[in-house]
Image (cartoon, rainbow, N blue to C red; front, side):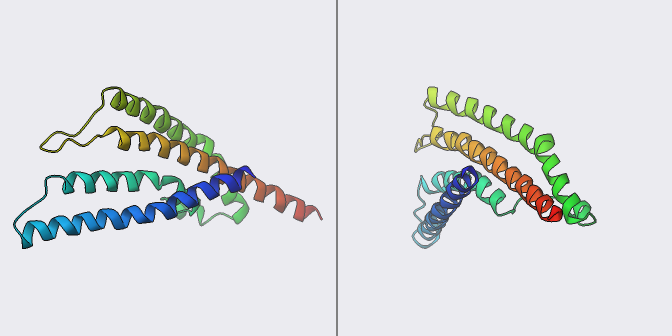
Length: 168
């Protein structure tokens, strides 16, 4: 149940965020047309598209992990048997992934709270609030951490199922 809930949450977020990609691409196209066709660049489009891209990129960490789209050391793992590969992956989560995710979660939360408390905004002609983007980093870190737990549980459950199948 927990695994399906986390998988479903990250899947839904990934699908919804595909709309954000269309939005920031549209803003970039708008700005390019305004700048080069009408010689009237916008003051806000670059900052908004940069922030939307950052939001898009960071929020898709859990979705990418669910679909195994992150970089891995397949060069070393491909020489192992499927069972050995699975155990190496299981061991890698507590050794590498969870410490990184914990630091990412706690530091991004602190980062977001400082930004929120100071009502941080961009500098320039148009001052855009920055704290929503920084809050999204903390949310993304939690989603990534939860997806890591789900991925590790899937690996463990697959190992247990194969053990049961081998015994029968």
